[in-house]
Length: 180
Image (cartoon, rainbow, N blue to C red; front, side, top):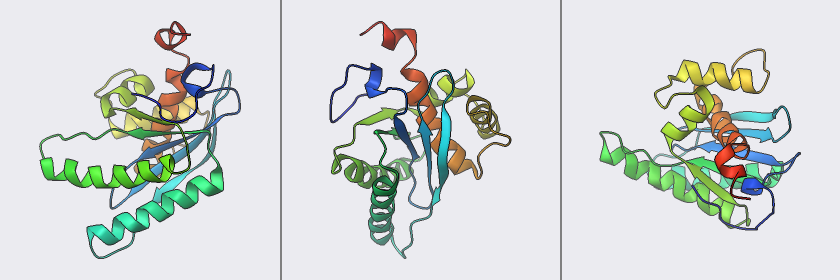
């Protein structure tokens, strides 16, 4: 986990009212969640899924870059949090995910947004209390943390919200606050 971009005195660059854009990358579906950092509660501003168009990987990553860039320009987030690559059992999947992450990182970095990265297990542990949480448990806990009536749908959108929430919750963890 680390930041790129401007420096602030607040933990992880957050302050009340800061807008965190959480992104769960994919070349077929990329989930996102825009969460306003607050105390005591965080607020969901918007979430959704972008489905890059194109017949091949090159066309899809160009479209993904344009979609994420447009989202950043429209929402004007304070920072971006993104899920780190998880290779699992299929190295090809990790490689393709790397392409998606690369264009997302480019879209954020070219706009001078601070970027924070979290592993899937770290996101699950911070949101649901266990690094082995299921999609359903993540959705339920996102609903709880953001005081929503229903979990965000589809799952990719809930995952994007979870990435943003992970960053918000990391800012208030004792380990981070002790570094100030």
